[in-house]
Image (cartoon, rainbow, N blue to C red; front, side, top):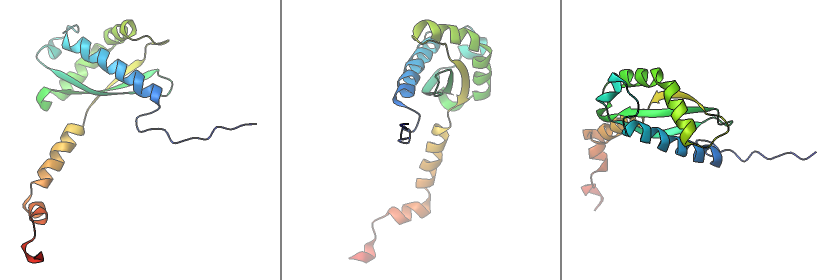
Amino acid sequence: MMTRKNKGSAPGGSQRQLRVGETVRHAVADILSHGNVHDPDLEGHIITVPEVRMSPDLKLATIYVMPLGGRDTDVVIAALERNKKFLRGEIAHRVNLKFAPDLRFRVDERFDEAERIEKLLRTPAVQRDLAPDSDDK
């Protein structure tokens, strides 16, 4: 009996998961940017879709979103959840998959993490450590 060696999957999944995730991301971003979702809570928001992670069987898509300026994230997520059925149907028409994936929406925390690191780098203690040391001459 031959066994497959597990070569540690790439961060974010297999090549197929990454490719399908990127295709779904483009479809969702296109749907949202053209205003195809008619929901009053989404109308005043520009929504960024930085990443979509697909499950190994491609039946679940976790869609990470961030409203411009990071405001009203809870309202935007709730509106997307309400319109999940419509979005799933639109994705099914645009992306050629055997099954339309179930959708799950999450707020992308990477922007907050980047801002936290940026603030940390600007603190006086870090600036002092980064400054060229005049005693080493």
